[in-house]
Length: 330
Image: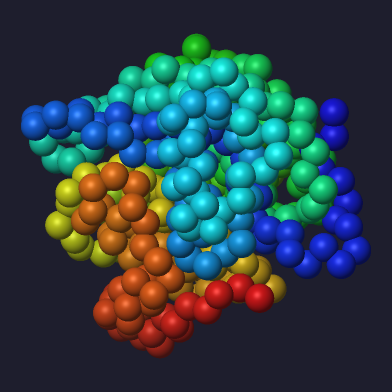
């Protein structure tokens, strides 16, 4: 089944970004009780893009229940379109997140992942996927098919967002990851993801290995230690923006959303080091805002503009000019 069709002439209202992957409910367990938030890494990225003013569609699988309604209402509040076929399950998935003293979260999942044979009638400028959706059968096969159809026509960004409890054997998960990388333009992963996939390699070695598999840019985030951007021509270190941490839920997804916004607005400049440095600082600012607030609560474009202006690029490098104020993609 084809998941993409050629964009219709005059279909100027089609979303600039299509996100493909799971949407679920995060049930957050804290010392004083539990609270529920819409979540799932791809859904968080889509929501973050909507908050940043990017026209975004999400292809997912949720149920016709109260939790599914909550997810759809949440996404619509940011202007995200739930694409046809996304109400395909009998029950919406959930993830129970237990917060550790440092604000990090440990997850236990109750999830089924299967994509309905929907056919979005447009080709986006950027397609983003990742997380459980790219590993868990039977839906993972449909995601791969979608990337195979789309990768010659649009930019593909991928965040594996490793969840070991759902992945089966290490060898199988690593093989799945490495089969998808050649279909992508950008792979973003955390240092924990990198160390799980390649425990015998340094982060620099892992970045180089992933580039060798066929992607154009590898981004490795390292929490309070910042992030690194690696291309065939450059290896750039980006410091984190210091902030008080409420919890880390959705921080990596907020980082990804800001990166995608950057690729939309600066895409014609490719992966030039100066551009990547600016995009990295902007993404770090987005993550810093998110960790200050409970749950996956990413910044608006206005909030991100303020944060970027408060942390100019020259403050870190001593040589470059400040990051430009962000604009909505046209």
